[in-house]
Image 1 (cartoon, helix red, strand yellow):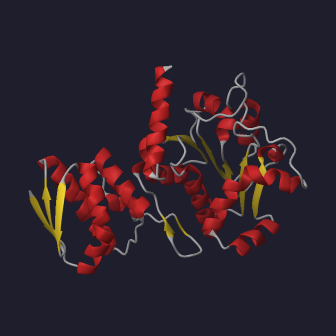
Image 2 (cartoon, helix red, strand yellow):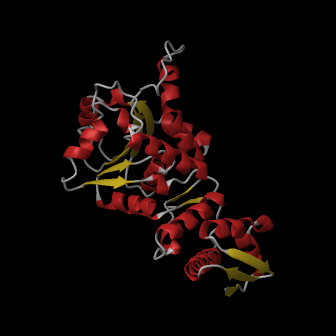
Length: 316
């Protein structure tokens, strides 16, 4: 049993959550029982689990003292991080601001893998980010690109992905070229509009400062002073990946994201991302960051779904 007290009643209420929802999450995650009264807590359970719950509460309270405003996803990620490694200092993760959105909301890493991802781009010109859906690969890459642009480190942002259908034959699509390719690029638009005013984004796209285009449009180009993001790279062929990587010019950085477990290429065609993982790992200036289901920052069921599919695959 452990008694934990906090000084600021207002911060304490936010920490506990409405109807103690955050305390209930901690109780379930660490298998402890928590009783609250005012700004005090009484934690019952196994001594190690009680210690972990106390550590999480104190670290998150200190984050809030540093004006950190958290949401449900942040809190869930913090719980998962402490469960996986109780030596982690949450302030080293959550107080690292990558970029502030148009609504002045700071975009920060949510776990050690995202923190490592954020730090790696400063040391390398080419960064591969490989892992399951929901780990923030594309979103963090977009935030890093926006941050580099806002600091004047690059003059152009290029966002691209292969136009491959995810298990569906969509057939003929009406409209002009832009309208035909737009469905494939929608996730990139969504991330962009979450970080920047829509009218400002459209203005930058009209000026060709931000370019969103299918991968096929990259052939024959050299991209200098640019931040380039290749999304859904598991759906590139070997030739497409080589073509993309050789577009990178002076003063540019590139992030390649993908999930090698969700390849939509025909079965006889090797993924360019898989091949790159096998042949480029020893080149200086190129780094590979790997995410797992433990790094998922979407709804907690997403991690459980990924786990279920992985177990099914292991049984084959």
